[in-house]
Length: 356
Image (tube, rainbow, N blue to C red; front, side, top):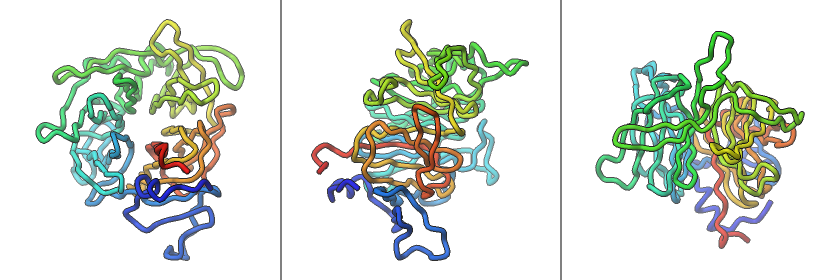
């Protein structure tokens, strides 16, 4: 295990509960009756944050400056239907670098995607991944009107919206749950939108469609896809061989990862990687030292994983737990069992002057 400086651990692996686990099992305070939670040798986990009150269903995570933001769905339905207890709103919670809650905001609907726009200093959130979808911006520094609500100009794919990714001030939102034709095809429907905000409108511009032409990374064959379940997206670090600089779109139900370079331009090129199981979110280690934040949906906790990472390695949240993804074969390999219900993932590299 790489030696982490005291300052690094204090800033990025702060904990609000003494639930430390490692590759050799629980700490002495853990219950002997509980099966030992493990992560691979050289790594350890702590509970970074746990929201108080009645918040449930932690899902996505984003980072703005030195603050982390987590969306709690509170049992609201995928089209905004009230939860069993009557709740109609989700909650976006801001945590400081020690895992302490700083502020929170309620948004009507089921929050699914969170993204951070560094240029505006805002968090962008989407609600209702299956239909009746809309978007919000949250300005953490605003004393008045911190939350603004936007209605999409159009959603020609016929479904809802999900993950939010922001690059160089450009906001991209995944077009989830596309409406299929009688033959089950979603061909020609947008899979990803570029979104701009004007007044109370979120203007959508399609970037590429569900039937994008892609080359299979395993077989080498090229053909049109038929994505039926676009779910999450992220940007692949340039340090990743061959695929660096791509936008990664996860076709969750299709068990496919789609890598698109020069998206939305005439030079657009795509590759598809068949996956061994469904994947919900993906994060890449951008440094050998840092922290992988994992949202545990079942416990509504944020788990911090620290250790010596491999630069460019892909981590995924899968049905069976946290895993690593082979970008050559599409195989998902379990990364221990410390997080049983992972959702949103976020990797934060250690600051250069904190590395030893």
